[in-house]
Image (cartoon, rainbow, N blue to C red; front, side, top):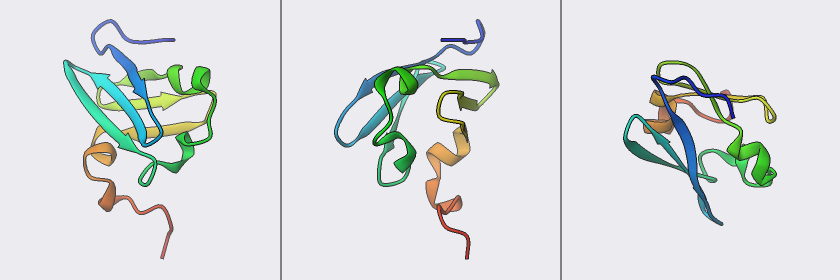
Length: 82
């Protein structure tokens, strides 16, 4: 796992409902209903998260890029374009 020393990011839990991401001393829940790409992913791929810049997360094995805003406000980022 590649992480910035300033912005430590870690997946702390994976459950049947979603994943928990720890960043900047705070934990965020990513439910599969809002972030379905993680649901059937291999554990090793979910755990391999990078923080290329502040408030930006990248899972290289899954080719998933997420901002902290999209995690906090998933309704602003619909899964299907209209």
